[in-house]
Length: 229
Length: 229
Image 1 (cartoon, rainbow over the protein chains, first blue to last red):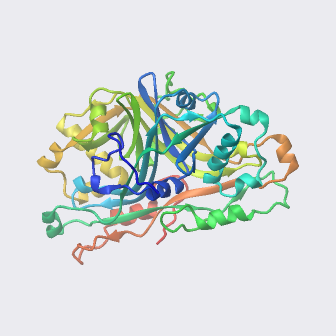
Image 2: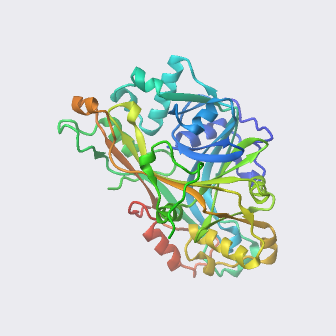
Image 3: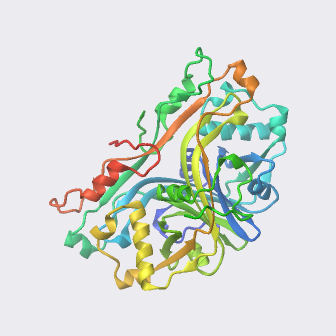
């Protein structure tokens, strides 16, 4: 596996100690997420919208309606930025200046390509669906010709990407630590998966299938998930 | 309270039925979040980075090191986009085409101003700290002159913003509902707050203060939080 090779744009300058250079860490952050924030430039100004995504090897797939402005810009040879962030905790320091968050974030830059090959389009759509709902692609009805015609798929090579991770306790000034006047520590945040809520229009014979139950139990990586109601 | 007055850029075209026009809903989505995704344009390309924020009335405050490129761009009269998203559930449909997510998202566009007034700078920094750690500003040591000099604060008026919310079950085609061949429903996702982890360097006399305990119990809006270990 090749390490992440930073370009000028993907070189982390602020908090360089938090930068990770292992490609496996990029994959781990991406694969643990449900949505990314997709940035495009429209009329000279940035637009940032949440959207789903999927990864196959070193390629990130995005999809959207053929009518969506942001994806149309992305399919037109314009540069995009895709960011996936997990907030793992609030870091309370002795001084407000040192408050922080524990997090994992991945940022990928590049000019995506419009996917036109029928097989790659299907593979990309499958990856996007499976990223939020593992096992769902083979369970649900696949896309028909009309649905495929209404959907654009773009691919971003993960060539220019960075990963940043903060973990652990606050980093305070020595004199504040010694003074011992304020509480300091981490308040963890977790994403947990609740009990599946079946659609009221389902025939009563259809129980919650294994892939939904398993996803609910296994969670999405990161801190151990807890099942809540 | 004035309703959200959409401009061309902040008019929601895709899924217009999910658009909300009440300013209170904008505030609710923003106030429930811990991080935003800040988009700027650097060298003609979008850059999207996670960062903290705080809100006072109709103004959103961002801060960062004076050395940070994204914030420097924002302070230089360049347009920015700030997006806050909560993922509330994975929507399983009978057809992969109709898979979706339940979510709340707020998107604000504009040209921020660099905050130079000393009182407003402090108020903005306080709002940013209190957004992730209510009660912390009065508990921890306030910023000294050196820390203030190293910090930039920018303000974005929430004049051009949109809110989008999806709730509820999947929306499938009638024939797929009638066929009844696949499970459909919602798998909820919740953000929960874990047990505070005190810094190992704390004097043993300092217990977890009320504002940390209360934040852990009350959670951050949205679905009812659960305390996990």
